[in-house]
Length: 348
Image (cartoon, rainbow, N blue to C red; front, side):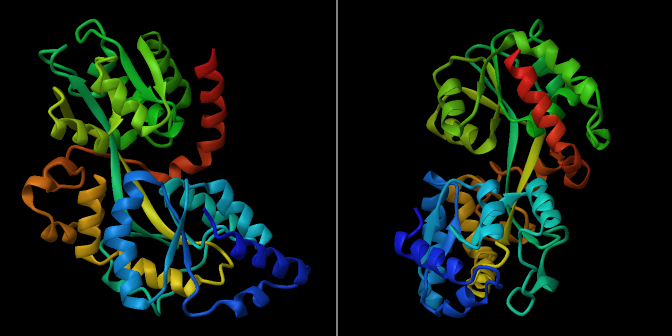
């Protein structure tokens, strides 16, 4: 949680500077003040602490405090109020584009981040891509001798019988429905919402649970409560390593990318960009991805990842060729409509 003393000080400064710019708060930032990073908690935090936070603090003397969970709403609120819960966060591509349009994030400080050295596609606006996860098909091998190998087969409960589970997250699920209906990955965006929901109508009776948390999805499949599900790759990999009889399907796995950004107006912006530059170092990012079950955007990071670990990652070349990439630019204008429509649909 955010340091209460720090938040109180920020609020006092905000009140004193009412009607003024945020420069009074900026001027109070000291070299060794903590940097507040918005995180996902749990395994993510432990891996980041070991491989990203501790090395940065040792190198710079700047301590890092964490605030979780990741929240776009808090990013938006603090940019407007000047009361900062965190300085740095990692958000999805669609949220990054929303944040850019709303003026919620700082421009990249190119004096601290060597943008010329970034991998192709690693920069998106004022965000810098770090790592990815994938939503993929996993099924119980003790219930299905041959399970679904794509989303059309996942939807086919006659040929591949058994209960299903999907995440209650519109932007991740509706593209799966379109692929199940025969839409080629290259033609997914912008999403044909009418066609997507018609496809979702067909699978809805077989969805036992619309899961909302990673641990929930892990327990559902581990305990055999569902036969097949759309699940984050990290949870599936963890189960496979534990010996749970599941099959992981990389074909048509949907990639989500995480981008580091600095909150607009943060008095710790320079420290934030110093941290981001540090967190992009190949050996540090490799350790984080291995411990947290993520996958690097920058292919050069695989030079620091053993083969037996790399093959469980969605951006590993052999897996990456089978995956589907979200088109954030085309998806973002649809987000409000698809979220509202999905919420109504799932409750019917």
